[in-house]
Length: 489
Image (tube, rainbow, N blue to C red; front, top):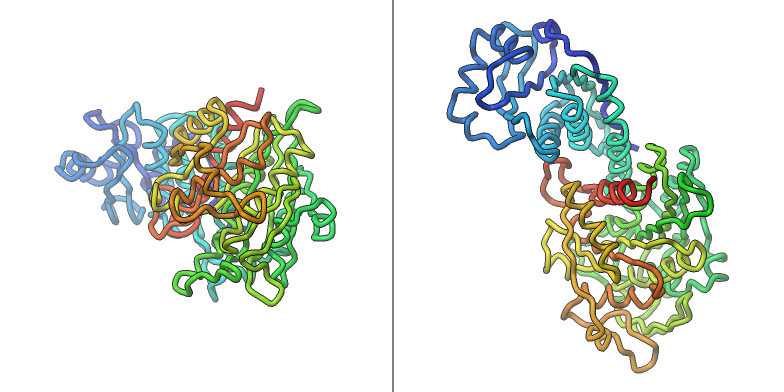
């Protein structure tokens, strides 16, 4: 797994400014007098900092943005990143500043001068999240070297406040690594093995193999992977940090390690991106790692269905009818609508076995959600307003875009089948909604439920403030926040 850049916290040392040979991050409060680190840098550079801050370009910076003072005279540093950050900066602005620090650091040691304990922790989180570089499959790959030192008045307090945030960053890194990994490396066997290794963190991990899944009646899930040589699996991860015997929150992830579309074969152009079709399972895995690393005082169970959707002489055909674990039958109209077949069985199993206090499923489920919401928001569907509002509040607090979408009985008409209890697709209109409506049929009446369609946010062609191009790790922070705010004492 890609490691976080080492981050440490130390007492502010003004004398270190002159001799530090890497990069320095300096926070300037607009219209405030220089003192401490800012005064020292201005003195060492012969007033260059003051001239920069007085300039038009610095005045136009948004909070959390920076101008680079390269190779400053009178200092050993290769650059000073000068950030415009008000004293009352928001968490998002502090993390944005940290993200720029992490992006611009390169391989140099970074020395950060923070305003206070909270700012130090949030900037460290932002720097950690953005300082990610997936090098696993590059010959002679050169991971980013160096370290980050955050100086503040109360380093121990800052370190304590940053610790749970860095646990979330570690979980997000795991998600990114999984989503970025090629399908010939991240097979269902390899995926399950990585999750089994997390037992060393205190998670209870079980891997259910195909014979066990068949006994449980998971025919819908198994039909997706029957055309592949890779065995289908369900992995169960339990974190039991809450009260004994308290019902857990259940997280369920779609883990299609590669999706050709099956017999309903996808076009060749862009099919290479289907290595990320296990994004939902990747997020669930990252959340479980984060909860374990920060020793969350909650009971949470993560379940992922791992399959590969391939065409072969044994593959499921359009027109086939399969029985779900629930007992409902499904006419498979399109084998490229496979994620819902995986999820419906795992969701039913989660409810039957764990009787969860609530259930959230995540999946790169439909292209339709991208048409509706683009790449800024995940689609959110729910049968419970309070549960949904709690998640949306958590997502907003973590600046992870999420937008609630409708459900309704009218959409059920589109799923009617002539030969089975339902079809697995409802046609092009409202494609993301009918997919959610399909899943809702496998949610028990007493179970609060959220479906997250993350097809548009799991992996991006452009960078974001806290992630480079590629896998984003979207959802790890929001779900961790949901657990922290609603399920921990």
